Structure formats: C-alpha cells, structure tokens
Length: 248
Image (cartoon, rainbow, N blue to C red; front, top):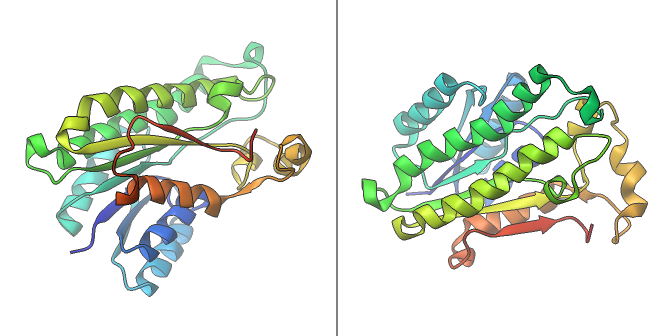
C-alpha cells in the first residue's frame, strides 16, 4: 500500500510542486486548498495521471472545523496518514510594524501558526505509535525571514515563521520516541505568486542580485528538499531547519 501525504495549500507554488514530486516518488496525495478549486482539481488530475490516488479538499486552515473535516476526509478516503506538509501560509501587503493592525496580525497568525499547530496535532494523533499508528514525518514550510526579520515588509510574516521553527524543534523532541520525525524547510526568495499578495510580484527579480547564487529559487527546488525530509533517506534527521536560500 502506498504511503499517504497531506499537503496543506497544495494547489499552487511550493505546495503544488511538492504534491507532484511526492506522487512521482510513490505517495498517494491529499491537498487542501482555500479558494481556487480549479487549480486544486488540476493538480489532483496530474497526480492521478501518475497512477497515484489523489484528493483535493477545501479547507481554511485558520478554522479548526475545516482542519478536523480535512483530516477526517483523509481517514475515510485513504485509511492512513504517513506524512504531513504544513505548507499553507499567507502574507499581507508590505508595510512596517507601525502600520500593522490587530486584524492583520490575527489573519497572519491564525493561518501560519495556529493552523500549522492544529494540523500537526491531528497528524500526531494518527501517526504516533503510542496511538497505534505507524510513525511518520512532518515538514513545516517556514522561511528564511524567520532569521532575517523582513524589515519594512513583513515582520509579522517573519515572526509567524519563527513560531514554526520553534514548533518544529519542540514537537520533534516530543514525538521522536513515537516514531514521528519533524523538520522544517526555510525557503529564501522563491519565484511563486505569493509575492503578488504582498503587492510586489517582481520581488524575486529585484532581490536576485543580493543572493550569493545571484538568482531566485524555484518551487521545485524547495519541493525536492521537503520530499527528501519526508523520505527514509532522512530517517535520522529530526528537529532540523533546512535553509533553501541560495546562500542568503
């Protein structure tokens, strides 16, 4: 029986690239999406074309009922869960801390932090050997912003990703003996449409020269790191934060 991976925010960008690579590596794949059902169905169709089972579930990870329904749907469809990629995340328009509102902070932290915590909780309940599971792996999609701070742009986003780093380290120690590995990737400047949400679609091009490798990264390069961390090739790695930044 194929292993099953759940990838939140799997209809675009890094999530979509991870879903397709995981399918090529032999996983059956469930992706969640917040709003773009057509994009999610397209990714699911590409997964099925690779002779893997797929499932696309609408779920806003800032809402606990949506998360519970997501995991219950995975249970009913696949009957198992072997891996979770906490990929869903948002950022808002570029601004300084001085310009941030409580409502903005609530949106960012509800999705990026609270959603990741709750998804990790549900995954642990299913994968932990203590609860009769087979063990598994969790990869959190953090960001180099967690250590760089994103001044003048997204300090709130950076802070939310720093929380994911702490979740990664702490949870890894909690569940290591239960057969679950927990790691994170910290992408740098990656060419995806998330930059448009911040109001600057061309940000990867603007910053390319500031990167030691003199280029921005691709979603497929981050996906390769994520799927490797999920794999048995990374069987003795847990609590690790892997930078995928071109040296930034």
